Structure formats: structure tokens, C-alpha cells
Amino acid sequence: MKDSATEVRVSLMQNISKLANKIGEEEVENLILPEVINLSKDNTWRVRLATIDFIPMIPEFLSERLFSEQIEPLLLNFLEDSVHSVRVEASNCLIKLKNNSYGLQWLERIIDKKLEELHKHSRFNFRIHTLFMINLLHKEVSD
Image 1 (cartoon, rainbow, N blue to C red):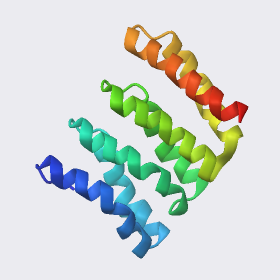
Image 2 (spheres, helix red, strand yellow):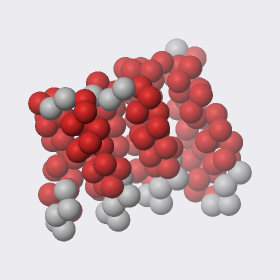
Image 3 (cartoon, one colour):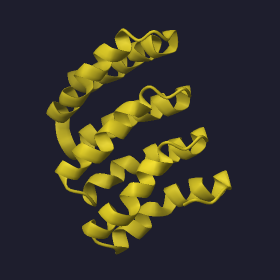
Image 4 (cartoon, one colour):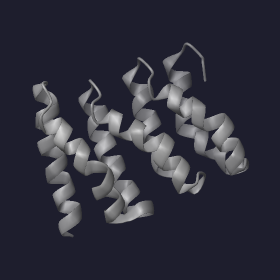
């Protein structure tokens, strides 16, 4: 996972669920989770994007407590990424997690404070993205 080639790191994140299926929760926690956290901070936006794509699969491998402690902060940090595509994918990831794993109450719990922060953010693009997220979330809540 420390390969210098971006393509290798992206490919690894795209296929990591296959490895996670073969090993147990403890091994996912000890081996894969630290690397996911590390790759979520990668300088290459495509690696961060691939990391987000893996996140909706994580609940089947980790306990809810571990997900809450380790993954939720990463996901919320992605909402402040400098790359628009990463922020959009993070927003969509929240919806996937709501629909497939944790439900509406979970989404409301983690997103309320973050939307308030982004709404008051000094950078214009984050404030605009907040409007995008509110629109996206409104569709999910009203369905």
C-alpha cells in the first residue's frame, strides 16, 4: 500500500474488499483499517476517491463501534476535501451507508454538526457544497 505509483494504490483500494472477505474482523481491524486511514490522507485525489468507494463495504467487516470511532471522522473530513469530486463522493457515500447499513437516525446524528460547520466555513466552495449536500439529503429524508 506504500507503492509510489498512484495506479497501484487506486487498484488496491478497488480490490481490498476481496481481501477483507477472506480474513476475519480482527485482521481487518489490525491490517486493513490502518492502511485505509493512511490512504484517506493520500496526496493524490484519486486514491482518496478510491478510499471513499471502499467505505460503504466496511460495515460488514467492522463493528459499529469501530466504524464510529475510526471511519466516521474520515468520512466527515472528506466533506472538506480540496477536490470537488471527493466531496461529492463522500456525500454519496453517506447516503449509501444510510440506505444499506445504519439508517436515517445515524445520518442525522453525524451530519447535523458537520453541515453547520461547513455552512459557516471561510471557503466559498465548502459553503456551496453544503447547499449541494442539503439538497441531496433532503431527497433522502423526504422519500
